[in-house]
Amino acid sequence: MRICYARRVFDTFQFARQLIDIESISGNEKQVGEFLFAKLTALGFQTVRMPVEENRFNVYAAAGDKPMVVFSTHIDTVPPFIASSEDDDNIYGRGACDTKGIISAMVTAALRLQQENAPIAMLFVVGEERDSLGARIANGHAPGSRYLINGEPTENKVALASKGALRVEIIAQGKMAHSAYPHLGESAIDKLLGALFNLRSVDLPENPEVGPTTMNIGVIEGGRAANVISDFAKAQLLYRLVGPAEQLKKDIVKAVGDLAQVDFVLEIPFVKLRTFEGLPTFTAAYTTDIPALSRWGEPVLFGPGSIHVAHTDREYINKRELMDAVEIYYTMARKLLN
Image 1 (cartoon, rainbow, N blue to C red):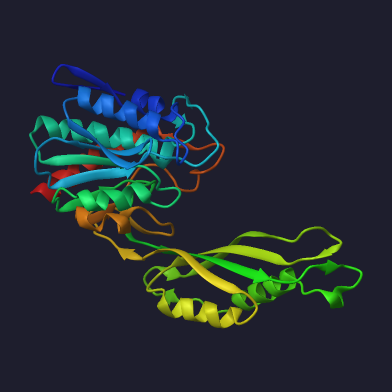
Image 2: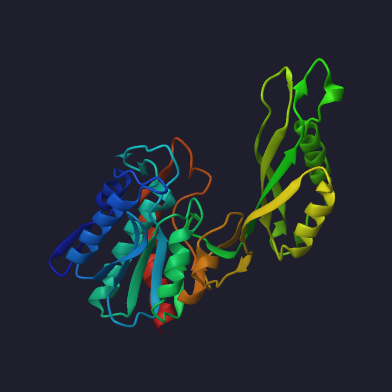
């Protein structure tokens, strides 16, 4: 959809497709970052590259020196790359809803606010799908904003809260031997299976407002061959948190015992979020960059598209929902500014 701003034409759908058609799998965001930098500069925003690491940077674009409200989301995607396409109803492709369509909606709303001389800015970060490195770097460069509107596919609902995440590695050590003589070895796989059995029996915390903590055993690896007693085995687990993690960590260590080593490799806290009267609400079962952007203001989580089609081979965003989000982003910012 084309919208005119002070004799300039901005096509929200076309811009979304342009972003989708630039491959930006986590770690390879440079090209899409350069595209965003050039486009936002041409649209009259004060735009800067915020270095993260070699060949990776966030893009920050402001409509004034001291923004009060900042729109933010991420520019990286999960693999594989899928080019854009569209029909009468939807735009398809990797990142269509997570979150390149959201970027296009935010820029469209920001252009309207820019015309009104509103103190707003945009922050587009790298690495959300991997480790939130871009957001963590950005947190050291907060401009003093009071509110952060973070974009993720929420079906145009406002999140009451966002679950946290606890990523755990369970590493078992053993002793190799010929499988015909198992008594001469010590199976790391047997130890790991025992540890995982115990972990599946741990009572997980529940929060009456947002539901239960969940656990997923995402990766299991180890062993040498079918006729070799394994000397090494490892599993990667992810817990979705609904509150503090300290007691859960103790329970995990106790359940594993002497069977294996426990490493807590990533923790993202559970967060409660600001809501808006008149907009439907839900609880996000996934994590976002919001905990890593704590210095950017009171957070709101909102965006068009469904998390249920994100990361799939048929990812899409509905065009009407996308344009509805433009209006809601604008209205949110105006309410917060007032």
